[in-house]
Each structure stands twice: as C-alpha cells, then as structure tokens.
Length: 141
Image (cartoon, rainbow, N blue to C red):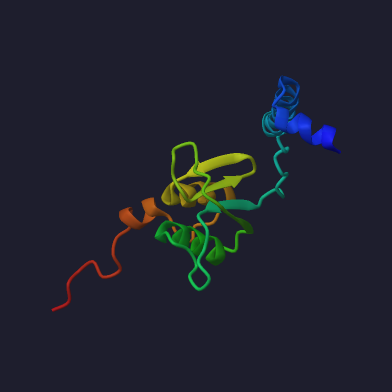
C-alpha cells in the first residue's frame, strides 16, 4: 500500500501520462458521440404541423404573441399539430416557425399563408384581410 501512495506522491511522469491519457480518451469519446453519432431526425407524422416555439410558462400559453397567434390559428382551423419547445430558431433566425411535410417556414404570417395553400383552409389570410371591403362600406346617416 505504501508503494502505491509513494507513486502518487513521488510525482513520477508515468502517472501524469496515465492521467492525461485517461482525460484525452474521455474527451475524445464525448466529442465522437456529439459529432459523429448524431441522433437521426425524428420522423414526424405526415400532414402534421410541427410548431417550434420557445418554452411555455406554467400558467401562460407562450411568451411570444406570434406563437399564440399561430397556435390559435392551428386550433381554429383544426389542423393537427405538435408543439416542440426549445430555443431552436429557424434558418431566418425567427421563432416561432413550423415544419410541414419536411418544409420549414418561418414568420407567423407566412406560416398561416403557407398552411392556407397546403391545407385549403381559408380561416384567416393576411392578404385577404387587407384586400376585402369592409362590411359597412358606406357611412350611415
């Protein structure tokens, strides 16, 4: 037992090399797992919208009004969707964004217009809302 303790106290280079080798081996295993063995992308059900948004609070639907707008549209149009909470942003750097049948779309208004085209739902369209005439076009006297 004393011989083993003397080896650690002595500070011989063999121990330093052994400890260094273990540290390098452990670090390389972590790097290999992170870089080379990435998890395969999860297969999402066909015709299901994957809504990427930031995490929710315990009593609030979302921290961003754009995610609330998009999720409300999906509920009202009865389009099947799944929430993915996290800080992953779209290719344009925006949150929320959706994936629909392998296509990624950012910006809530563009998402709604895209879903109107793909699903045939005309529940809400930003372009239709601005071009339609008001119900009461003439002022009553």
